[in-house]
Image (cartoon, rainbow, N blue to C red):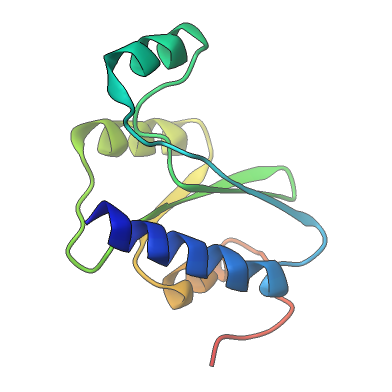
Amino acid sequence: MRHCEDILHASIWRQLQHLLPEGCLSWSVENRRNGKREGRRRKNRGCIPGVPDLHFLHDGRLLCVELKTKSGRLNEAQAALHERIRQCGGAVSVCRSLEDVVAFLTENGVKMKGSVA
């Protein structure tokens, strides 16, 4: 399942590079599980579980996207962090396709350079 999510993630990221406007800063976060030792190292550096896959900073607002395959579900840490992001004034959405991501960003005021066919 992780492999399918990686393919989805890479495909959406590539396409977004052609659609996002100049005024939107975007980045992706790597959240792989790499064992207890790496988990401790990340925790000591302030990394927290459940961080969404994609982040967009637009007009002073943080927009986050958690990518999931058609059958993928949020885990407990992801659901909790999504709620915290909303409480802090950010927006977050679970998206399963490029169309979902574009719709979420558009609904939140990002004017795309193109459209999804």
